[in-house]
Image (spheres, helix red, strand yellow):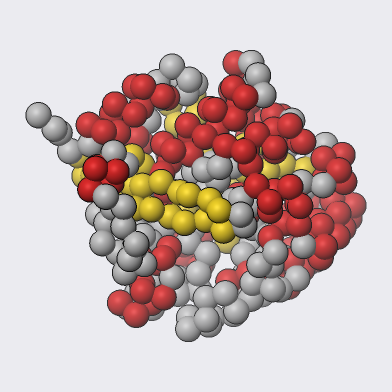
Length: 353
Ligand SMILES: [Zn+2]
């Protein structure tokens, strides 16, 4: 008899997921996990209600529902059976939310679980604001994002071609450098990490602010192998102090290339939940990819057969399996796997002053 447990939003945790975990992950996933990229937020802190029109304009909006500290405390017991899991939490980087309230919420609630958090930093934040926030226990760094430049709900990606310094300005970088803080950088540009402006600006940040623990999110948004091959340059490879998180990357070949070019000590695991509680699988073709899923979302018009959809598991499990396969491909030992899954993150957090 099948047994389903409500997980998040429309998603249930089912026997298919239990079987997938036992077959592919139970023997590989270490006992202690650190998820270095997770969004934790309460829709009570929304300033603007999410409308049906907004949900239909961008697939992530159809998946973005409250993911509070209490939700996460409950969910980790389901999706990480028998594991001790800690997180690096940050809010939903969207000016539809009250950003100050979102930041305060994490500062007040993460500590009880020994979780850490990052401050969402609109570029208008002053040095004093960032400095005060980074003095709070557990607040170990910052999460800038180009959507925090200005409120433009009708054009989600209006700032995607921005310079990094437009949303992560020098006055904030100076404070982060002073605190030896962790900075999770979601790179702009539709060309992704490999855009020459991104590569030049990252090199400038590394040169001017060497005390920052700079972590490039989503392997530089390189979800396809051609994007990764363009972006993982010898210059980035040569910079031992530059880190990458694996969140939202389900592509084994991309992860394998990152492990080969950068080495396992520079890779930190992250999920990007709650988005990756979604059920389904991702397919790649050239420089594009397609998210397959089993819920009748507005964005989900091109469905697979019921047999195939019935075998879907959580994207976060597909992500873990891709990471496991890539680690095996390059012959990582247990210590290196435990580094990616926890210890590399703890080492970066320990730098913060
Ligand atoms: Zn994210």
